[in-house]
Length: 216
Image (cartoon, rainbow, N blue to C red; front, side, top):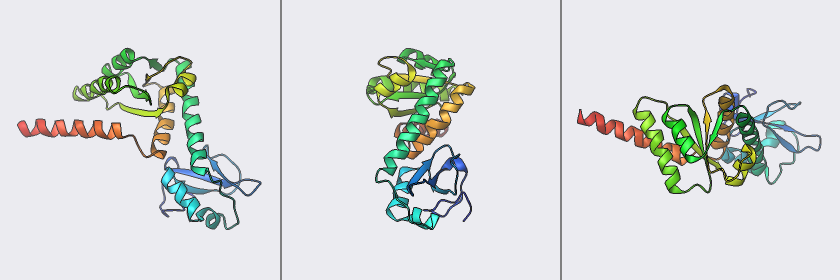
């Protein structure tokens, strides 16, 4: 198999769409999120479903052609690594001035097109999310970028990463530091199955555009 072929689907893909695994000294399967651990590796499509399927069907053993130990919590382990990577990069972006906090500042960053993407804490109220979602839709209709939103972390984790308290809404700005964070948020979001809010927002924009065209 090609080095970047998923051992579950047998499909080749770009490195960012896969997660690499190696075998540690104790014969345990180890996720190599940064793709820099030594030794022969195998690749799995970068979502929890495929990783758990690889574990359940003993596909790691087949790929490495050896008896390997697959941690029972491998899915959680990968999630934790991706989460810590994303939060760590978020903290660096905050120090670089590429993050704004608070509903009002987030909405302003969205409306003026400075926001690259938005983060909502898991505890965010429907009303707070709705106001920012309206700003995201308005930005698209005015010819601005489609600014996606993610709800990946509880308030405590966001607050710790950003050095604040009660962080419920944050916007990562379209700067180099922000783009580095976005890559990791996309990876975590993909692993967890995608963000329904974004799919709904983009579908709503498309429906409104279609309706407008029909009236012309």
